[in-house]
Length: 347
Image (cartoon, rainbow, N blue to C red; front, side):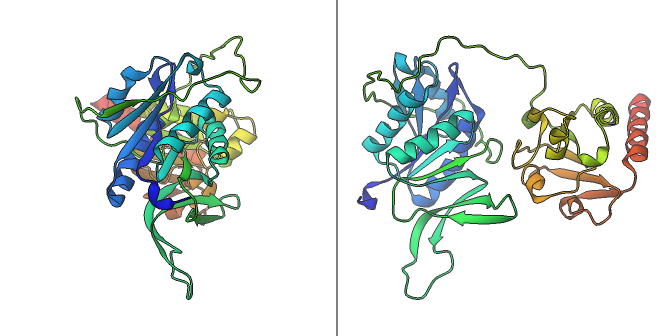
């Protein structure tokens, strides 16, 4: 492998039902930063059936080029044809970096592609940057420049690891939705569109989709919320979440929770914030009865304002909170809710 042959930052632009997923736009935003540091461009790889029209949206969010793999075999996501498509693009165009969203699709696709093209993959990254590796010079060992440094929680979130892939290309990473930020939209911006089809011959590894059943949920996506009222084990019971729901209603916010609440069966998994849940960036985040374990903090530390309420004054959550209240949430939350109601009524 001649590493010098590999140039450019590629982003897998996930789409479902011909709708671009938010993670694709987030990764293009981060890809632009990485490409700028490397003096190269960011390319979106769009895979599907009748998806060429989506290229303009990718361009408006920062893609310099869009490679479109369009084929009837790619109408619904299936592991084998999508792996063949993305691996073929990588082998043909030789990118230096490939970013994939750590969605259900990305977590299936990324490892399969990395194995097929014989490179490494760092999963669930929380930070990506261009730098030197080893980060700290080691006597007698060459320090390589312009490497992708991929940072992710390790050992159950108890430490942070920075990983590089100096000997192979491309350098591949999956990134959880909500961790990176979209670039500002530039309406009317165009990208170079390249159509590429490696050919698809179904074999015994192609899954046949007999029926697609879509679940309809009336639960608001906590990743879109501007105000989150999040409860932990300290709330005490599923029934006691009613006081958090009352506060969220007054604020026009959404209720979320920690993993302990999901494990206890008080709330559903789609409301969980944290390393094993969702990463959120609300304007205001209430951490109520949440101790502040690193696994939870990893999912909410980018909130603009963090307000912690906990009876334990030594709880780690106070270390990341902008405002903290030590006391009984059963007294504080109802009083806060009533005070807000009164203030709004006065207006």
